[in-house]
Image 1 (cartoon, rainbow over the protein chains, first blue to last red):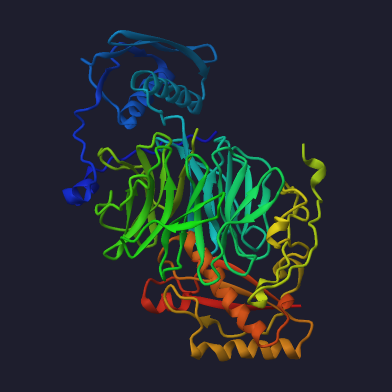
Image 2: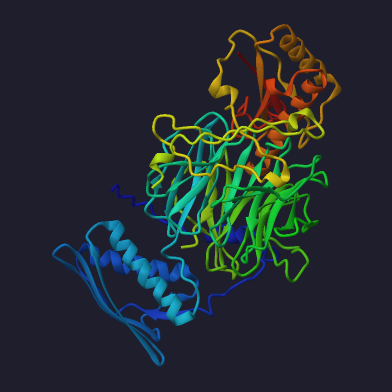
Length: 400
Length: 180
């Protein structure tokens, strides 16, 4: 396993560049719970790494800050054993405690994963929230014309892996609900087709190879149906593909408009998508059972790239004043935000973390490059996923 | 396991076209692996019969036919975020139609492209619609829809790598590939 040691750069400057009015919610950090790791002894290279990764995860979760005087205390030892690392620890917080004893092999990736598990367990038990340290993010690196590949990394930007080695256009990677498989659009056979395959390697299975456009695949919350864009009917429309039967159903019928980017609601009853029936791309919601659509957005000259969080909120890229910025709306509450989460250069392709709090998106860096950033709707400063330059785009955050 | 489903041929069915002749489609499902990479996963019923959109059969011209070298046509250009044909561009399509009428064994694959601005995914759909618009005009000129296929590259394959308005103009295009 190749070892990646790219650091994570926290650039508060990005937030400073935005006026206060551009930040939907401005957190002060005061609401974070203080955690003391002083009593957790990390020995040996692996033990020290474990403590370091745990600390980073807790800070990135958004719920904690590290403070030797913190009321939440992790005590114990992360120490080398014959074939790896053994963690024997106890987490205590007012009135409660959690015994946490695990072990893993000696590889860096295993040590990091074990630390991610403890961080997530702490978020779950102490905050009753969904941890994201064990999740992964998949994205595209576009090198040039018809030349791209998929990559993925852990939520903390470490463990970068090149998944495909095709050097052809790759668009819209999305995690399957199991957190183990990926779906995306590839041109490996010359025409755009939708494929599914295990993220860790294995057979690439074509899911949709109809004539014309096959793209935008997104798996329903129950894992049984794929929403996608097919052009085969003479015009790109939103369809669903039943994975068990192979039956395809068309959900939209707009001969004079194109559709893109279908994304499921948390309960699987609706799909938000991009349509340009109004003359410019805007968000619409279609009811899967009735096939009835309604327009969702009007504010902003274009609204694209919807991502529907488990909380019910929809993040999207809204074109305001000549650039794309990340905005969040709640379709249940109605209305559209005047403020965006980002400002400055183009920010596109938001994807929610399963905690419904963090969003990963791409940010234009000029000269044909773009970087990936993690936003916090509760106001923590944006965090760059990792520091190396490239043309990184279209990130998707795994559910698991 | 699905190892034995490698060569699951797609169903062949016909479609009654509505509107543009380009909605008469021959689609295809994974008809076997290339280089042992793929296996089919989908079932024998690729489309909901209720919608009348059952399709299947031949593959893309780019995979099943041979490119005719030396026969090239000027690309059709489009306006920003538009897939309507400008009057200036129509004669380019007519030249392709004339070639197809004079060369009955030839078929055409129309690639739709976009400039880099905007959502990658939306641009894929926009590129498809541009190609479909060109396809529709070819069919209206009397070309059998079975001889015309579309393919979208969205913003993935620009003709010009610049970021000027001129580069963007050159990238918003439909390209013709002649196959036999």
